[in-house]
Length: 465
Image 1 (cartoon, rainbow, N blue to C red):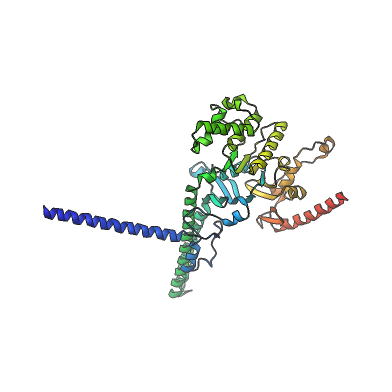
Image 2: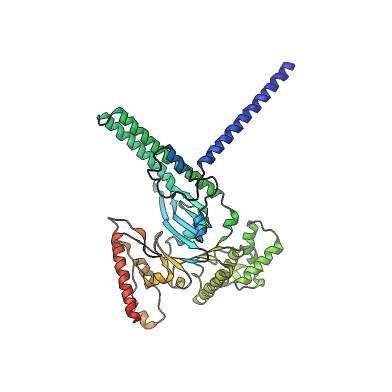
């Protein structure tokens, strides 16, 4: 019996030592992961491949990996420059079908813009160009395909498609290099020593790129799953359709207070006070709280949608065509209401619309969007002073004029990209043609637009005289 007890004690002690070793090993692995994933405030752009200088050897490779950290990514320069929202190279693709018939829809393709604190930023374009998808991607209703979104310096959304493609094509390039070196060795073009040296360099280079991209993918997944809910609570959205966005089975009070319930505010008395305050703020009365959406007009429903967003005390508001389904007189009321709320609450706004005349006086800057891309971006005054892109001119020509005499002479410009642009030799890029004025164009078009600006300025001077 004593021998058995002795053996059991030995077994327990050995298990304890093994467990301790495992714990030490696990801690060591965690420490190594943290070492790999640390980064500085200045990060290498995750949307462009690392330069060859960074990835030449293991020492430089470690420097590249220092740009990745285990906590949510933060950029101090956005805070310093009062940039409340930064959208960088956003791509949002949707897949349909399966097997042979599977295809990909590029709803938003590589767009970038920044919104400063207290600014109203207009996003304008025709139906189906990707405006609503952009807003929904910002508020995390969609998991973005590629790119990154920063709010108050913190990354609140990111996609890993580019990083995954970089790993894939790095492997393809490495295999091609191996095959090329094997052919040269076979044909006696290089010696065995040269073959081995070049092969080792190619393998080191490929391994370094793959390690960096895998670390970036790990960081992206971490950021997506560790976004601060208190930060996301500051971003609210007014949805496009005032009818379908309100649940017909719920009272107005339940609709407005639903967000409070989700965020953990379960005090009915306090929630009722907040609902009443939100209703009064948008010009409605307390009695409406017990009614249902079908009992209200379109303008009142839109006000209820605004109240639902305001009850969360947001700092950034995404307005997705809040006036498109309303009459002209009601549109003016909603625009004035949003303008008052912007000043009263210190809101920053992303205002999505398809009518340039609506956003002309309401927005500080305007981005014109076509087929998932931003084709022109400028301040409101600058865009109307120097409309350069043919699609911007097409939108401006669609604005009806209140004067019946000039309305008869209005010429509607139809935009057909195949007729206007020739991108067979050189692809377009977003270029700053004037300070703060960006346009999607290639080099020949940039020269043409510069001449057009000179002509517009001369015409303006002549009109002022």
